[in-house]
Image (cartoon, rainbow, N blue to C red; front, side):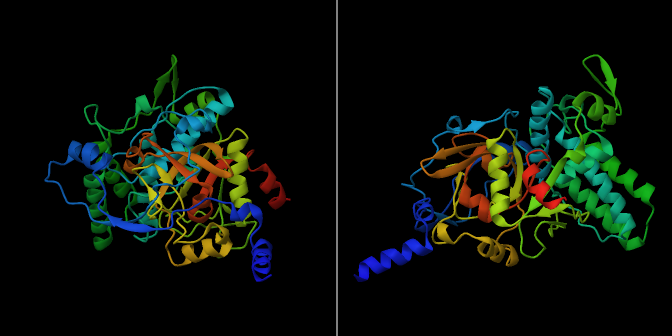
Length: 408
């Protein structure tokens, strides 16, 4: 009788769909990671130094984990350009959002284009330099930004094809921005120290520094025999509108079903146009979008024990939190104590179901994305998305269901 009561009680609190969820790895271990794409390919291309010993990391033991996709071919996925490495830069936001826009352009026009990620980076740094002067130095000036910085720059400055502006020298294999960023920050600190608040001087100097390292963006490009400015290329050739893309988050720190700011240093301009959704609506929005013809630009935390670059999968280990307890408060707890941070932006391009488990195909420009068997891709379990992914950007038509409820 006692056993029957316990079983009945468990069934009351954990519905069948939950207790049959992902069999998560139960144990973690310290291990020294193997040298990966960054150590073997990226770093030697710009820095000739002796190898630095890698430090031990606590990781989830995922050996024997069941219900896994075997390869990217197990997924239903949509057109996207092949993965490209962001090199030695913190510009994942530009790579992810640019890839997302390329897929959207194909979905809307059937045109297969490759856009210049570095044009958006260049213009974002120009706008940041302007803000640095206007706010008297109170601006976060680093590699990082947010995915919707790309649509912001698309609206303000247009776009360029990749071939017209690769943003690096022809003989340079990977981007590397450390020296450029160091020089820009040094200049800006001198501006602040000496109160040289001349916006024209500051912006032109920042441009000169970027022109040296990245090259100067062209003012006119020729595409299929027609000359375009970045703005006319956006409007007439790409036929894409920045205002058609919306950003979403899920946090109890703001009112649900209203727009608010994403509180993150990378949101350096203080963008307050993130629709804040309850977790189930947020997760449902992502899943509905990718099952109905859309891809998603997604940003969140990738510094977890269950985020395994060598295997190319990301799960939530049970020693972190059992699947049944992943809810709004569990998510909020990690946001509040900064266990979840906005580390990395990626492009969600596909979905599959393995048994009762949902997995998402993630295109990743980061070095770790090239460590696994499917180069440039990762497989995210649905639990990982619910718990650790901070914000997404999608086309308005993919979000129509939630937007119709919010925008009366």
